[in-house]
Image (tube, rainbow, N blue to C red; front, side, top):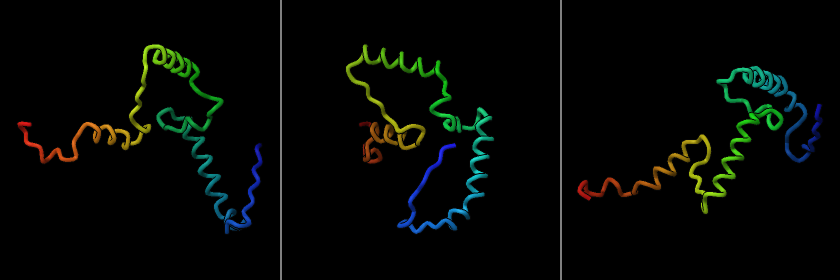
Length: 105
């Protein structure tokens, strides 16, 4: 097992305070690994970087080669699964003054 040593002297975090969270953290850890067995629960990152879909990774690398060969520019809009990526696209293609523009225009 990996051992991590932290110097908490200046942090205000005491061994007693850490001990108060020990059981809670252990329970969260167990729950995450229990959930990992469910393919509909999105905790597959627990086994990274050793356990991943190697076929999918190969397909991504092939697509990257095609894009690199066929394109001069690749524009990626978004920031993952967050709504903020979609919001950025919506804001890009709509005017801040949309409600003030006549329907004829």
